[in-house]
Length: 295
Image 1 (tube, helix red, strand yellow):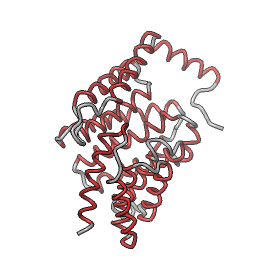
Image 2: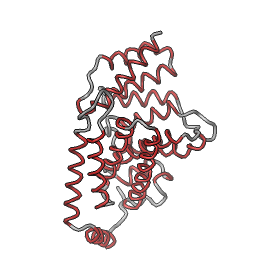
Image 3: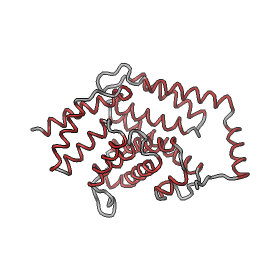
Image 4: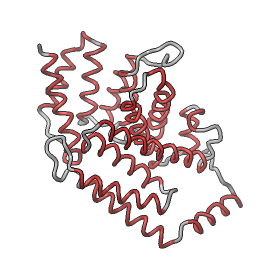
């Protein structure tokens, strides 16, 4: 049975407070802003040049989601979609690492607030990061917005760590947090972001150094198995294919032929229309990776 934070009279009080706190007109305006953000997100590839996105379309999405979240801070859809837009802007529209760091710092703060919101709403008294992933998933239940939030919160937290320049020992807590988000996602809905939970776990086990008493959990075999699982969820994911190829090249030299075949598959593929900029970047990176491993 899924536990809920408020029951009986407490639930009625909480709902009444929420209705007072966010008037009906504000809820309608928030829905309009989220819909406007969704339209801008769908148009994020307009004006792109290769894997370089134009600034205006994604900024329109960010502006709309920001308005929605300011009007209704409890709106988890607006929150995770804003984090998704931050990710895209930083990786595909910006070209300055300091600007990226500032953007992801804001994203990290938005993610921290969202985490506290989820803990309060679903009664995670010990905190999301102090519970076993199955406890979190069982308590929250079937809530797609929470799974999406976990993915994009992890993306912003992780990229903030990447651009912060801190050494891995200083980021151990962050890495453990990303792992927790990924494991919760897999349990809640492994289909989110085309096998995103498995892909994130695979990437962590690929890239994080194994340090005794700090990142003892890192497992290179698990890196490969999680990336294979992500491809089972979405066999057409170019991102999962290149991540699996990289892991095989790094940790399984005997499987180099498979890795090279994956890279060739990517180069023979067209970018998905709904991930035009993102897949174009994957294809560009694949071309370089394949050339480096054919020498």
